[in-house]
Image (cartoon, rainbow, N blue to C red; front, side, top):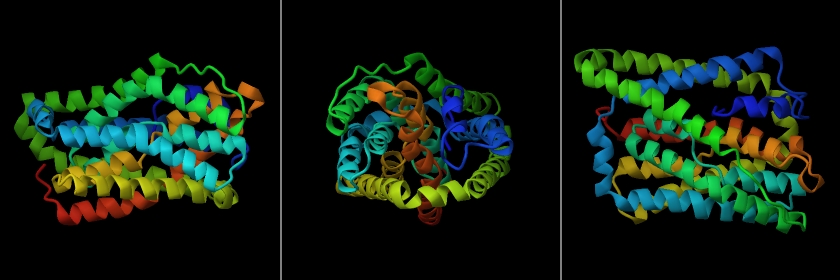
Length: 318
C-alpha cells in the first residue's frame, strides 16, 4: 500500500470494520517497514537518474499533458460512472470517487521503475498532480456528496500533509540518489543492480505478507467493493496505454502512462475519505475509506503483468 500520510489514517484504518482492523504485525509492516522500503527504492531510482533526464521531458509535452489529463479528468469521470453502474451505497460511492481523484503517488513511480518505464516522466506527473489535486479533490468530493447524498459540503484538504508526503517519499530520496550518482558515478553504477533487486524483493515480501494477513477482510469485501475497484484499475490502465499508443509515444512512455493513470495513491484516498470527510452529512468515514483500502491491495495484481511486459520488451539501460 502506498505510504504518505499514515499518521492521519491510523485511527480510521485500525478501527474500521475491514477485517477487524490492523493487528500489531501488519501495523508494524505498514507503519515502519514499508515506508522505509519505499524510501530505499526511491533512493535506488535516483541512482539511475540525472538532471538531464528531467530536462529532456520538455521535448515530450504530449506525454506530460496526456498523463495529467488522464489523471485529473478521465479518472474521476470513470470513478463516478462505475459508482453509478455498480449502484454502490453512498459511502462506498463517495469513497470510490475520492480514490479516482487521487494522484499516482510513490507506488506508481516504483512500478514504472520496475517495468523499465520513463521514471522521470512518472515522478514529474506525481509531483505536479499532487499539487493540482489540492484543488481538484475537494471539488470532486463536493460533487460526489451532491450526487450520492443530495447535499454539498465544503471540503478542506490537508495541504501541508500532502506536500510533505510527496517530498518525504519521492523528491528527497530520489534527489539523494541522484547526488550519489553525481559524486560517485562508478560506485552508483556498481551497486545499482544488486541494490535494486534487494529493495524490490523486500517490497514484494512486505506486500505479500499484508495480502496474506488481510485475506479474510479482502474476501469479505470482494463482491461489493473489490470488483469495482479492480474494474477501475484495469480500465484506467488500459486507457493510459491506449492514450500513449494513440499519441505515438515511445514504448517507455506508453508503459508509464498506463501505470500513472492506472494506479492511485490509496493512502491519500483513505485519509480524505476516512478522516477529512468523516461525519460530513452524517457519513461514516470507516465505510468511505473501504474502496481505497481494498484497492490498495488489489492494484498490485494487474501491475505484475505490466512489470513483466516492460522487463521483457524494454532494455535495462535507462
